[in-house]
Image (cartoon, rainbow, N blue to C red; front, side):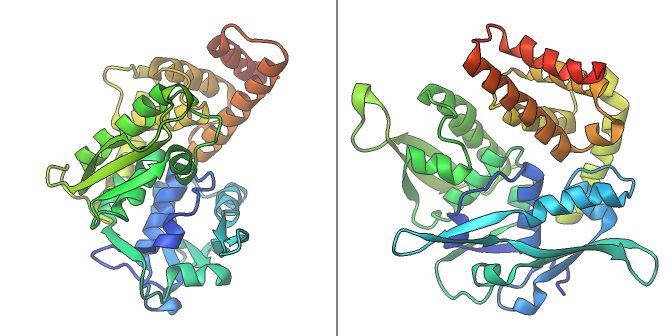
Length: 350
């Protein structure tokens, strides 16, 4: 079973990095990064990683009270993460990343969470000799969206080469963005590319610039981008996993005291991050202030346990957003924000 390694180095096979994100939330992507930092890629016997319940709940931003049914929903979500590895003939093999998750007490009565990699996934995580890259875990801990974390890994893989050319559709697939999202390049540029560019320069060991590359499509449509990747020495101070967990615990406790006092100018970092996560559930269609209003409606409507759980909040809001999209296909909705707010409010009436 794996123990904590002080340097928390993540070593990742290129093929694993080039597999679509499979709708992982930010918390699940962080958890997977932390898992990879806790194993020894040269020793498959370290495939089982144990977390204290407190640390696991903080990493996943869960309610601190231990409820088995509640934990089952969280660990089931991790066990459902599937990767599809392409083969040379144009097909693929699909399997889960993890095969088992154990939630129990140790001999001293302390709760823990233990997770084990799927047998099929072992070649992606252990005993590989080539085509891999490494980075220190702290780079993943301060990034605030799935796009930012995935963009970091996509470019970090090519840091030594110094550049990477990607077709726009391929980049979206690597980021886990659906084909119909960000149909206009200007939206993709502002909400994804520029946001990631700023985040990586502020909080990680690389930075990048980008430009259109190659031939353009009809009407001057941009089809490919060239990224230039450089070493970055101007990032915010590094953070250890221990410091990250302690910082998140403090922030989560603080969040309880500010729910009724937030506004867009002085909201806490943890609350702003939550709004950014929920914005992703709505395809980043609404402003931060509008997300605050939607979250306020969710607070009025949903049980306390659910509202404290980012994963459940995301899933709930994403379901409501998709419901609105389906209804919009039948009858055009003029005021989408107001309509989404109203269908959330109807759950309160029920």
